[in-house]
Each structure stands twice: as structure tokens, then as C-alpha cells.
Length: 90
Image (tube, rainbow, N blue to C red):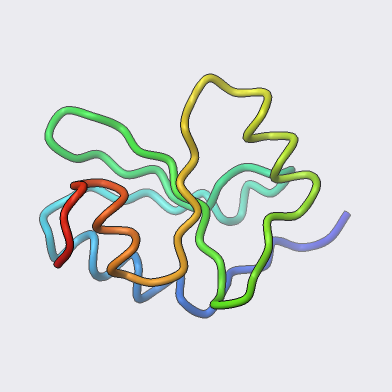
């Protein structure tokens, strides 16, 4: 089994979401296709997969996304992450 790989934008995304006042729990070390972040904002939960600029969703991740009853947002920048949670740009 491969070790969990954290994309370089992960810390920037977490920082941006926390700066907006959202709760952020990193799930990156869980592996097995589990998304990278669990975000709580305004009474709702959001699941985010953080990718580098040209990063792609791996097969195991796509399988996880398809097996769970939650929308998983794939984000590449802090701005995309904030937009996924708020629907607004920063």
C-alpha cells in the first residue's frame, strides 16, 4: 500500500478555509481513496479532494467518491476551496 501523498497546495487550502472561520479536519493520512479534507461551515459538511494544478483523481479515489453519499469537490487552489464551500469567490 502506498503512503498517503499530500499535494503541495494542501496547507494553503487549509489555511484559507480556516481564515474564513471554517472548521477543517485533514483526512489525508487515512488513504484508501478517502478525500483530503472534511470542512464544517455554517452547519453543513463539505468533503474536499485537494489536487495540484495538474493533479488527477486516482482510480481508488474515484471509487471512494462513487461509493459514498456525499458530493466530493476537487479543488486545486485556495480560491476553489472557498468557492466549493461558499459558492462565492474570495
